[in-house]
Image 1 (cartoon, rainbow, N blue to C red):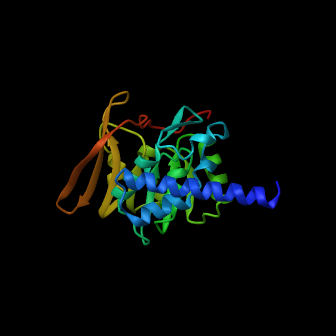
Image 2: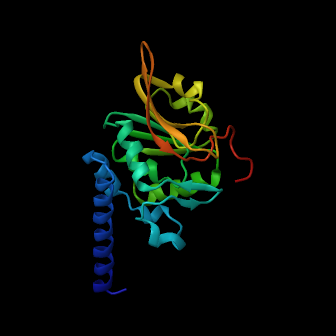
Length: 223
């Protein structure tokens, strides 16, 4: 490709990203740091090349291992609710494509992400390396158990639904910490919930209706 062509492609993506961020603002995302993080992460890198034209659309997209990549407005809303600051260590349960962890990496001191599928973790690690993200580490494991060796965490984000928050995740959260997680039965509309771990107990706030894949115990045997 000649320079003019590559410049045009760069300008095109810049325009796409600007429209993408404007769309997020129109959908109610107000946190400037979250909008900036969403703008900084090149979403097309995380999308199947055959679906590239939908990379900046506000839709959920399929990824390998029968999983999905949430629509950008939901990623942004969950990130905003997590209230991450530059000194926080964040645990993400459900790496998926790695997109959400990459967004969090621009907000947190450290992001630790775990997925039951080796394929997804390997692909996400490559993307993190391509982007030079030094503060994200991905592990294959059972997300319902968290990552005790790396605990405690300031924030925990769960991108799969269960009837309740696993006790292990609550135990690995610092006091004053926040968990964002979809609660409810698989195959049904669930509720995105924000839990704050206070000395007096848990404070629960219901945020919005959502649909997520189920949180499955154990690491996958083959994928």
